[in-house]
Length: 93
Image (cartoon, rainbow, N blue to C red):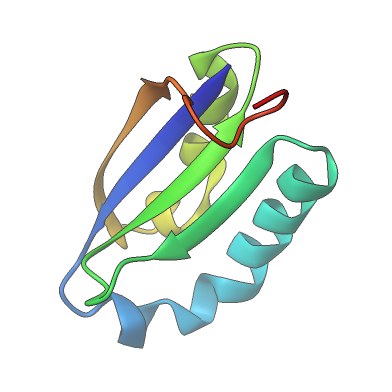
């Protein structure tokens, strides 16, 4: 199953993220190496971000978000996980 993790960020996100960026990217790279995180990045302008996961359930994605230093340190004002039905581009497509 695919899931979209959507973040909304504080207005000064770019300025504040430096202190937490290495830890955030390490967690993202680990999830990528494990085959769970497929794509991730900030929107332009950087008022939010999208992370695309392949997971057995939303709980795995929610756990990632709760542990994310951007979330824990208030750079993310809100987040949500949405199941995503891939029509073109997924495995076997």
